Image (cartoon, rainbow, N blue to C red):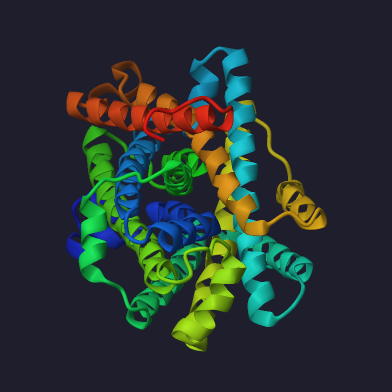
Length: 416
């Protein structure tokens, strides 16, 4: 990286050393919560909600790029900036909300990986959870070997997920014309579609990923002057676009696969377990097995990344760290409670994404504030058009959350 910054290496070989932080963050956009919401979206509404996936992914690209820029320019992650510049009561509230979001994230990720292992190996869900816990903790033990090792490991799992869904698109009878129409035609048929759309936003634009990305870039390469900072931001923006474009295509593939397999004749499919059992007679055992392999890779890798983000959030907001094994144990408790009380795992996954969507404005507003401030960013402060677009994106998320909460509390929503 130093050779590139000093002009001794260029081209593709000059870009590859900087490729990594966005790949780790991108796994948050392909976690089991996405599986749950995308299966429901495709099964019940066909290709109609693909535009929601596209919009959510574009918002994610913008805010991940801003998060990475904050870490590169200031040498601080987002949670640290909040602790240093906001009043103490505000910081504690933000930390509490962010920790809830992190726990909701881990609930979805941990449950998803356990469900995949349980179905693939034919073992009880509780055993799948235990195996998932051991695997994720084992991977986290390697975090001390350096950032590159973790980037390569997570990158390999992203590749597995992407290849699995490439195979699924060949196996499923996708109506490509309807899919293209669904991507470019905004529509919201009913209240159920709205709830799923909020879940898609919550599953695609992840609070913990926004916090994490700034931490992944703050120490990775220390810039010595503004010229080097500008180069690092440029490399980071390219990586964000590439990594999240892959994540967006995977999410669209999930919806398209569910639409092709379930919408006509099986629109009631709303659970991961049901999707697996229904895929076997519809598309064959190979399709069902590929689906589970991708789910396991998603659950394990996103659970690892979620734990990393949780540590960073705690350290940043309250300047305190706990052992990895303790955080891993605490964040697994909700998942075990869900299984113990016989709650529906897939419904729990979807609701966890709604919780994430409600928590999302906290990092979005803070990130927009810091990256738009010349006192914080100097010449790297957001330009006017970026501020306008980011403010509009934040308003969209806040608006969706307001409509969702209004529905939860029984308030009338015109048109729904």
